[in-house]
Length: 218
Length: 259
Image (tube, rainbow over all chains, first blue to last red; front, side):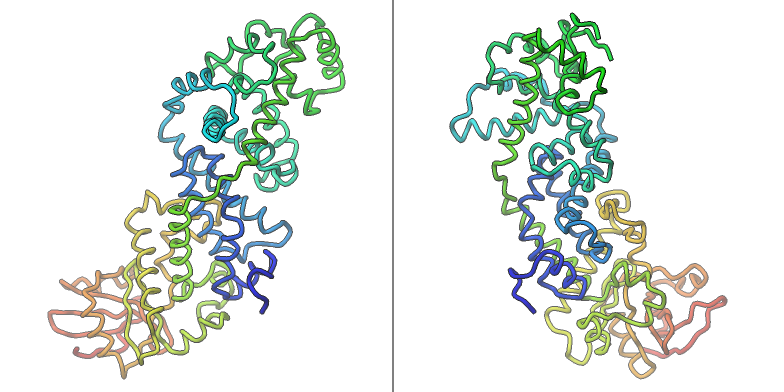
């Protein structure tokens, strides 16, 4: 049998199904950082992400036979992890209906934040993005994490999320629109700041256009 | 569209992503040509996408403690598999339970008849001719841990732990019949009964049709494979009698012995 590093993902998964005790661990070693990033960004909560990744990968371990080979192994693994995240988020939402507790404090952070040239700023920016994503619905967030953050194509994201590509596209589009007032501090065009400041003050209303932009017509 | 009305951010985003009808797209585009604030708003959407991509491109490796917990969870799943919990696919195969596993390691385990008996969430590691090493021992513990955890938290963490998987994996079902019962013969039955008694085991649940068998105080029951059929061993500590039953209706006693 080839050395572990030489086997591709599909071979490793098949070897795992055949009883190879090292194969799945290698598969996890290869992809866990990326799966972790997706889970963390989708749930916005390290504890939830940790639980979701764990339960998803144990589940993947057990039902590896169900992998059909019509998608990439990584797509399959992402799908299981993202589903576990969405399940947990739905369950959590069912338990507590209030929005994220720190959303008001977070606005202050958003308003105070400026450039992002040093590492502290970068991690702050990361936290800001995570918090802003937390304002979105689960579906929009999951789509944006996969497409904009992880760089998956719309088609791949659709496979992972189990929905049509058009659905992914419109979730991303609406999600970005909602993020505009939540991430104003990162706009490069200072002239535009005044325009969106008003809407940034109440993220709860982010779905409604600011007063100057009510001319909706289709 | 009214050329003086500003499109919403959603409409601008939809235009950007090619989601508007041709008519609507033309209207918004016309408006954009003359409206700086909407053009800036459109640029802001691009910037949102850019910030997401930037942040997404920064590595966020799995923290060491998370990786450790994950490794442990996978080691438990591995031990469970080695201990003989059939995979979902194998459980679905017709005659899978009797035919036995096709995995090399299982075959070894089954041939040595060292199967770890895990019943209703309770694991007994049954000693045998010395073929079970350290690995089997940890396997039995882990399998028992998992089953016990599933049992302990029927509405909690155990639930949904197979998120997205098919119903056949529900933890509640796991203890039912997915584990290979210990093979016991008349010859080693008394020894088996003594070991079972020594484990101080919690009674496992008998099928309802022979529930009456273990109603005696302190009775312990355990599922085994006896003379090729799934049977239940019942220990009656008061009389130090061990009996094995086939759980037909009514239950048929196959063998009994003092222990």
